[in-house]
Image (cartoon, rainbow, N blue to C red; front, side, top):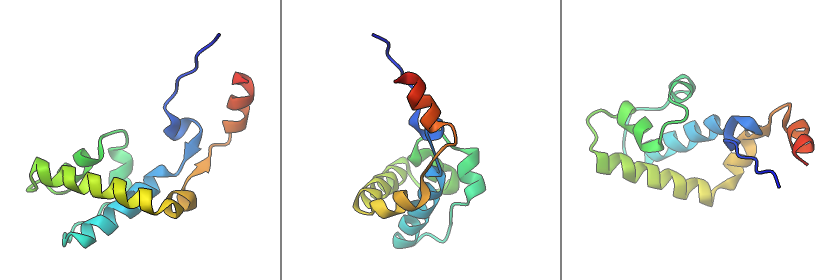
Length: 102
């Protein structure tokens, strides 16, 4: 038996960062923050935890506040899978990778 392990984001799919930006900005707006996440900032911090992204964007926010924003984003995306479906696509080599593993 062979075991294959990979980081799904970027290996088989692309575009998740657009979902992160969209959800983050909606949650920031709902919580009354004027700051907005840009795609460039998201790309620069890709791989970090969501609360770390909020900590960087909102340096005056407490750890508890940034974790709460993170939880709200997860809840929001779980309730709105159409945002993920709209943004996430297979990478060009996804089918070849899966065929090779098969």
